[in-house]
Amino acid sequence: MTATVIKVDKLSKYYRLGLIGGNTLREDINRWMARLQGKPDPLLKIGQAASGHRKGDEIWALKAVDFEVKQGEILGIIGRNGAGKSTLLKILSRITAPSEGRITLRGRVGSLLEVGTGFHPELTGRENIYLNGTILGMKKLEVDRKLEEIVEFAEMGKFIDTPVKRYSSGMTVRLAFAVAAHLEPEILVIDEVLAVGDAAFQKKCIGKMQDIAGGGRTVLFVTHNMGTAADLCDRGLVIADGRVSYDGGIEDAIREYLRPSTTQKLVLGKQYFRGHLLDEISVKTLAVNGIDLGQQILITPESELVFEFSGTSTIALKDFDLLVTLHKDGVRVVTVHDSAPGTPLREGEFRSRISIPAHTLRPGTYTVGLGGERPGGGQWFAGTDLGEITILEGWSSGYERRSVGVINISSVGQRHMENDPQR
Image (cartoon, rainbow, N blue to C red; front, side, top):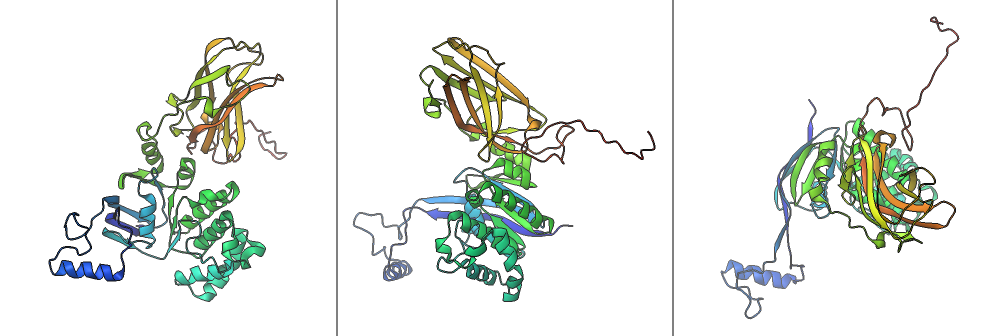
């Protein structure tokens, strides 16, 4: 039976607004002595309520959170900004204390929460590696054995003996992740900070986290990228308003998070587009599989991916393409058109529909664009960042596990063997 390495029981954390810790020690002692003697707060202003102490509004960042994590699990923690995800990770990393409840951790915890967290800016990268190893309770010889591997993974090379304060944010994140992952904590806690790194390094980090979990260690990963969550995590924890709203399989957790009620519909307008034809052609609606773009949309590989859009044209063009683009990691992956070459665009309202099999796209999050152009005529309009869709990972006859690349293409192959006994 797999051991439980994290147990969270009725965990709560609140902050008091309006209190910024500006009192001197003397003022705090005077206020404390007055409370012991049953006297009013001596620092209250005239006319202020004599409640015995000043009280700000209480904000519960977390409220009665319960969950367990088993050894070797990769738990994805997802939720909107302000839901309480980062507060939870700070408590698990022992950076801040809970207001109520209890946590039990079995093993060393390595954390990567914010750019530069755990690094001393005046120390070099090499010195910070040893500093972090000491904090984790490792001996110098243990860190010595890992040093070369950390430097190579972080791609630091000649910069390892430069003070960290001179690093870019990307360099800092690379080194911080390498340190957290290679100093062998039993529990690795990663916040959204990986978004600072480039796409190649993010992919490298995901592979490393999978290796860590495969070695029997535990990973907690906060992300807003549902494609990454689906690729990496076994299980999902959805945090909403400081509470656990869902705890279960990652695909169901993503569906819970992406329900239309939790996102905002995009209202298309001229501000989303550029080009020569903004005054002549306007796009009013754009939906994917019946859901208005602007809501982060979840697509299973077995389904059809259907783009529907409508708009108005005040001019007639003899030859005009309307098209949808999909970008991933800053690269245009595919362009699909609503009609054959040479199709005219008439004056008035138009509606278009484009469909492709979803399994032709690899798992991940894609940015949707929409535009139109007159081939060779220099007349065009385009909006390249109108929203996102997420293709989930799921294996089927048309979606082979061994198909690796930017897109997934069905193919027919043949192999002939000279010593085939059936020939």
